[in-house]
Amino acid sequence: MKKLIYTIALVIAVSITVTSCKSETKDAKELLKDAAHEVKNATKEAGNAVADEANKLAKDAKEVGNDVLDATKEAGNAVADEANKLAKDAKEVGNDVLDATKEAGNTVVDGADKLAKGAKEEVEKVLATYQCPMKCEGDKVYSKPGQCPVCKMDLKKVK
Ligand SMILES: [Zn+2]
Image 1 (cartoon, rainbow, N blue to C red):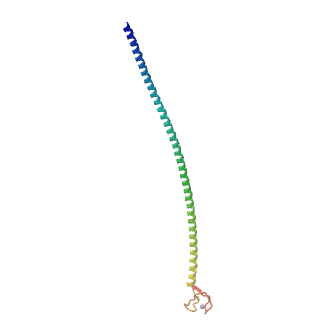
Image 2 (image 1 turned 180 degrees about the vertical axis):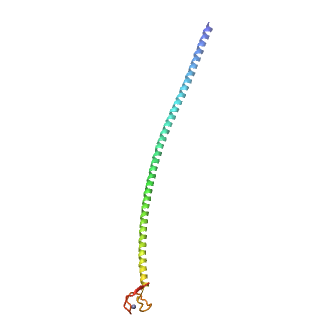
Image 3 (image 1 turned 180 degrees about the horizontal axis):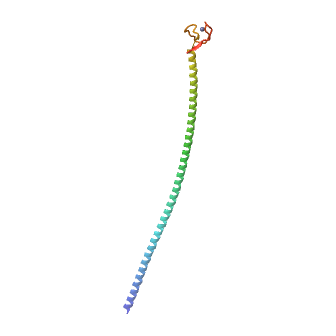
């Protein structure tokens, strides 16, 4: 009888020990599971935070990039406008110079024409000879207009 009680007590003790052990093991497993879960969540949250920060930075960088692009575009347009203005001015100056040159050329041509005409007249005057229409003195010619010393008639221009 004593042996039976002892055995029962031993079985109970072992059962309690096993149950306790199992329970502790279960608790440990669950704790481990919870810890793993928490670590996973924390890691996920940290990853999300990093991703958010990266997205913000990327967005900022994109905005800065767009600003730089806009500024560059505006600067480019300003330079192009200035270049167009300069080109237009240069063209106008070129046209003015062209007009002035043309006018000066025309003036020179007019002057040259007048000089040539005057010179031609002078040459014709110098080369012109005069003679009595009655040829009182035969083929004798004079270099200036006047009167025939013989018949007193006006001398005529001979070509
Ligand atoms: Zn004469």
